[in-house]
Image 1 (cartoon, helix red, strand yellow):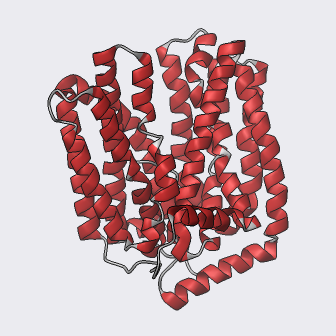
Image 2 (cartoon, rainbow, N blue to C red):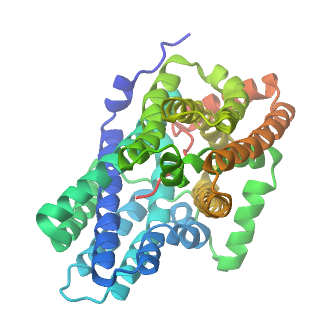
Image 3 (cartoon, rainbow, N blue to C red):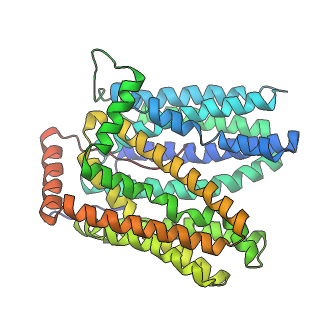
Length: 429
């Protein structure tokens, strides 16, 4: 048996280091732009609706981009797609620095900037297994997901500090610079590869969309794995109602921050540990039970625990969410290389739409019934039922022999073509 891959092996790959650093710049820079514009719009208008629209402009474009732009990374060389997306976003963010620009124009520029995040992330997700073959792919995915979580937290805090000390225009200029550096890292650090698919006649956007949905939903195994990924909408409900939950417990702003930080912190710790110490076969076997636990743990909030116990509940729930790594890898094996970018774009779009709907529904329920603990428990209960159904379904469509066969297919494909399979990751720039 060959020795197991390590994180040192992952960072020894020059191309991965370039990809990872570009992700650090991307996530931190996006937090900077979004927070800076939200603060600017609120300062100019003192209108919570306009401020909310600005915040939504950082997420809504993912829906359109995931539907219609993600497959660019299948039809064009993936490195080129990432570099072009970085250049376009650099120009758009730089335009935000223009003095006395109306806030509506700033929101429009933010919307356009985020539109190019979907093809960028689809290309990044699709090229990662080309860079990291075999078991190193799972470790690399864990590194990127952990980096994403950490950079979101650090980026948001850093954005607030930057706006205070250097102002919004200079903060936006810094963000434009992160796009430029990201593009340079990708262009110089990642080698060119041909497009995964070359269509003689490109179908219409609606036909592409239809084919994409048919790809991910037409196969029962892919559909099950996709729905495992979308369960995140249920077990992240505590983040959406963190403020009323902490307030109900008599806590202030620090308690709200602790609720939000508990999930990010536990995931940041659990993800690399799960990848390093749990073997690939065990990850597949534990995927269903962990998915059930990540939602079922939240049902304990129905007992109305105090803040300390609540933080433990939220931390364990988030930690059990490491099953997403297993779902991610299994999804990779089952999606054709020439269609992976589009499949990942649709998967990411579903996560964002699902979380948005879940957050809005949970917030409305809390507003109506003033019982955030009960809302979280109900959301966890619904997620638990769905996770149980998906677990039973997964055992039927992927029996032990099938999982081993899938692993052998992946190994033989990598050996024959010296080009491994591709990856999906739920992140935004």
